[in-house]
Image (cartoon, rainbow, N blue to C red; front, side, top):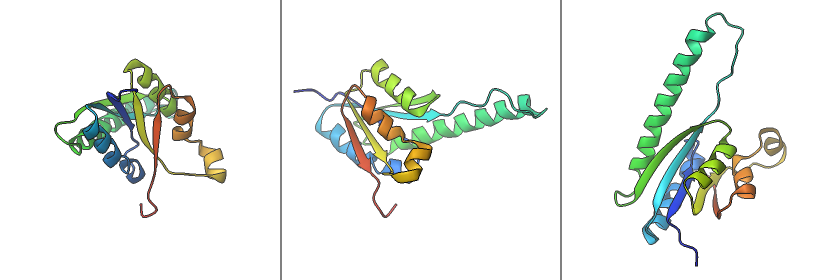
Length: 149
């Protein structure tokens, strides 16, 4: 039987994403596991036709990164203290970076929330969860957000 030693919890810091936390904690309590909490920042545009671009964008990127680091620490504190957590802040396309991290950190299980979007929203925006589910080299537990969120 496959062992679950490393669990990845990708998050976009939404309420829907937080719905997966109890599942990650339960699985981590059953099996001696480490949890990798992952957030992916979008790449900043390379050029903007604004003369203040070179001053505004780096400062904005620094603030976004600092906020994401703070939120990752806060999420990490929501897990039981006996569950070892790692906070990963990545840059780029969310699905691609998650899949790359799965290989790099030899993840055994991904537990992630999905909003369950269908129709035009799914076609227009795509789904990180859908891409990860289709391409991951390990099992993916998809938690659909409760209707009350």
